[in-house]
Image (cartoon, rainbow, N blue to C red; front, side):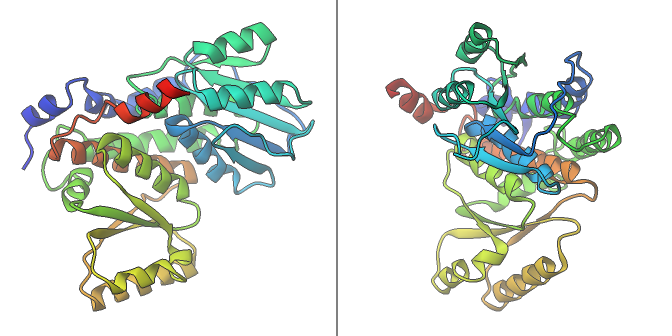
Length: 336
């Protein structure tokens, strides 16, 4: 069992306190005084960003998958060759100093395309001011991963001309975060807390099976477990895994399956999850199911990310690990 004194001991910088405030942060961000930017004749959007900043682009890609707009995700240095005058390049770097994102921004500036950049300052702000590039400054909170909701809901407002989420849908997502917060916050350290329950389940290497449409939630959880709990994790598409990954269960391992499901997944995907569950039951493989709340795509993904992110913080604390420092990332950045 976990008590609050342990949370304070292993999370001295208070990451959990930021997560307790996520619903209010989301609400304040969407109600901010940043003006929307109107983009016209866009048929291709490139989201460029790394780590916690890149996860924001993945969320928007999931939303835009329901439209006719082509979306490219860049997690590296190079823009796709398909960038043209009808392309919008969106660069996101919470710190403002991500070298890969700066490189993409510089490349986009040399092309005939629309650009908008988001950061909390740093070199990206300097570059955009110097080159008169459309730029919006959003203050960070604690760390890039903890700043996820502030950046997401601020950008949703600013890019409302191209991201098809109306005010009612965004309000629904914020209200769902508020409802979930009552269950998963640090005020509830009982087994009724689904994030804490998931953290308790994880003792080996979690393997997340996700459906089409929820990849951004799974990818985000992978990053959060790696950065917060300092642990390995695997993610696989449930349908694709049925053609290869499932065979690995013929040998015993420390891997633990977690089924990440949407409230109203495609019927064939629902069937596949049931088949996989039957396989696990038949072979006495323990698994965990996490199902999204009902609602629009933003509501589903945001609440899953909230639940899973908090689980990674609880997992860190249960392991006696401070979730905040990322010394290995700091080492790599010092070399580039």
